[in-house]
Image (cartoon, rainbow, N blue to C red; front, side, top):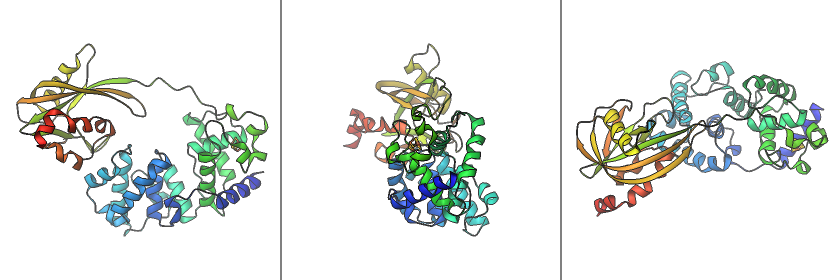
Length: 361
Ligand code: SF4
């Protein structure tokens, strides 16, 4: 049965797969970049970023020699910025320690920053034709339905079970094509809702389909409620410039710029939280000029509700606690800096605000 599934999947993929830019190359660097981007972002979002990224950094050396801020600016808006920081750092390591040649040994490759099991398997199988299987969300869904696997896909302990199935199924003579085929099947045919089983090359071998139970697979543990945080942020004006601060390089949104602010404490009015946070974070005394807007943004593990205030600088010299750098910039220069997506939700409003329109005149 496994041989039938292998043959059918590969035949189907070779006859009819989506034309995507990273499928037109055998350059390990370009394949690596695509897999890093695809790990947490959808294909249609990745395509323009991938093209832009390779335009800016066409080879490993150009990426390794680039400034991190430039890399983050190109990545800006795609989220999960640790991917960009790690890829940049890994490119430097490959240039310095491996003379610019990406190691095709899994132990060496996995030592590079940001290279986990998925990235290593994807790059080594697709670029170097080595028999490592990938087990991402799409693959787990296909396997769960094909073999009626009852282990919940979102439970850490289930990973080994899916790995064992994938291990037995992979085509060792064509691992890269096989991996791409099963991921493609999960992406466009064996979709989370309403899989198109009549279009599926392996429907005759699929246990969930045969038993009319595709909707029951994959199994999942019920998701925990996502916490919600209130944030107050200030656009601090001084001499026709506004204050921006840079987050430390590691952690969530590491290395990106933002406007100063922070969490609103329980029972605290947002405007007071804004003044307090700016004092604590940047050592500046400010006053609220007016309320600009409220935006909402969802991250993977939490949501934020952010109140944004236009503020006047009153006194103090910037002394940072938390951020690692700051700059006073004109609104026209804001676009030179990489910002998190949540900030981009109000930056256009900021550019249109009365005060900044006057400054632009
Ligand atoms: Fe998925 Fe349906 Fe194919 Fe089974 S037959 S693998 S459920 S698309």
